[in-house]
Image (cartoon, rainbow, N blue to C red; front, side, top):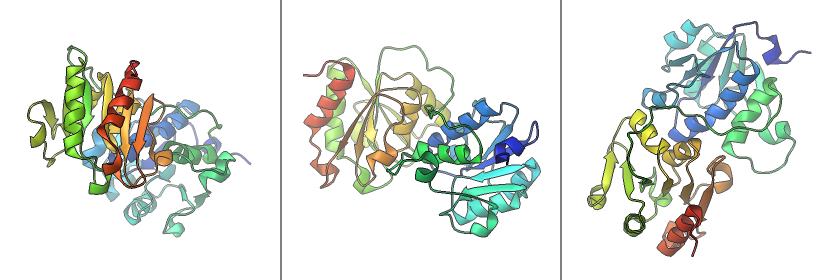
Length: 303
C-alpha cells in the first residue's frame, strides 16, 4: 500500500503545527527539510505563535508561516496536517484544518483528532534508546513515507551580520532557575573570552535582567531576525540549555552548553561541535574552570 506521502497529489499542501518554543521550533526544521527534499512539489506551511515566527522566515522549505487560528489553518486547505506540538490547542487546530490526513504521535492526547497515529520514534528508527528531539520529529516523516536517511542540521536563514572582528555570543539566561548557571560565573567566563581575544556579546530576551553585564556589549530583547544574524557570525556560543543554543547549532557555530534538569541526550546541540557541562547536584556544581576548559577545547587551544 502506498505511504501517506506517496498518496499526496502533486502540489499538495502540508500543514505542520509547531506552536512553540524556541528550541522546539528550531529542531522541527530538519523534519520539514526531509519532507521537502523528498517531495519538492509540496507546499508546506508552519503554524506557529507570532513570537517564534521569525525562526522560519526565509526558509525555502516553508511556503507559508501561519498564525494559530481556525481561519488560517482552514484557509490553507491542507491535504495532510502533522501535529508536532501535542497539546490540546494544537490538536484542535489540526482537526479544524479539515485535512483528509491528520497525523499525531500515539502518545498525544485527543487521539480522536488523528486518523494517522504515529508510533514511538524508537519503533520507527528500529533502536531502543533515548532519542534526540530532532530524531523524534524526523521519525514522524519517516513513518509517513519519507525514506529513512541521515537527519540534517537544523535550518535557519537570515541576513549576514555586519562585518566586524571575531566575537563570541554568551547567553546567561534560561526559562527556569534550575537551568541557569550562576551569573557570577558567566561574568568570569565573559572576562576570560575578552582577555583571550574573543570579546563576547551578551544576549537576553525581553524582560531579562542583563544589568550585571553592563561592562560588555549586549543585545537585549532584540527581534529574532537580529539574534539570528548575530549568532550566524559568531565564532563560539556559550550558554544555558535554551533556545539560543539550538539556534547557534543550526548555524554550525561551536557551542558550550550547561545543562540543569534537561537530559542532554534529548536536547544536545544537533550536528555541530559542542561541549556539554552538567552536574548531578545541579548547575551550581559546575565550576567556572570547567567551562573555561570547555571553551578552550573548542577553540583548539586546550591547556
